[in-house]
Image (cartoon, rainbow, N blue to C red):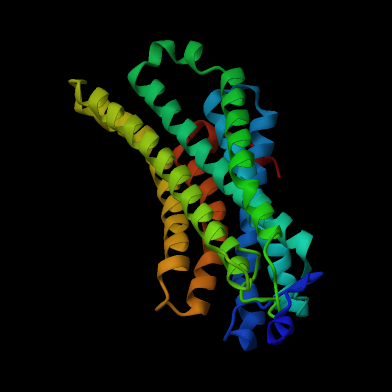
Length: 312
């Protein structure tokens, strides 16, 4: 009969606990978080506005920048409004459906961004190694189709994750020690068998990121091979300079994802508040810096942004 005292229940809400151990300084933590979020929105919406207004920027590279800006906005917006409500108003409750929805959209956006970075690597390869056929190989329509394929892939891969979580029982612990519904954080509070959930989450991360990094590495291997064939050192520098922004954005995007994924599963010695702070910064800092990096490194975009800035 004792077994009946441990009957799993179906919770209607979870509690997002914020950053465990740092509850007393939540209000202070919210200051840089909110600033990063505002800067991210301003930078990414500026890119979307300028590219939409300037006909000369209606090119594949800038279409990809707009896709990246949309994923950056979506990534930070999935997390920060609720996190700030926790910090400012102690509004910690979230419905189970709301939690799974947040997790689904966040993971889809991250997978979608990875696909965009792969397409950007392809864009750089064609621009450097086959510039004469660039306009015929990479049209706006083809870039849009590649973006749609990336979105479909992300949805199909991520959709099983909330569905698998929905079938798990939750007994007495409905408190998620996090500021948002991260997949492994939700898995850990279940009292059921979570082996399938853990394995699926890890496999999806490694397959998606691993495949995408392999394709990016292949693109850059071909780029390096093509650049080394050029006789002029000036041409070498110009070719590599066109890749600098993409490399910076790629490193900022993939390094935190891999770090967060691996430490969540294998980094038991890392303090919870350190992990959660880093997880939040991973969703705030890259979206804030990406438009700055591309604004500085892309002359056409920099000039158009300057034109609109001078009008204000």
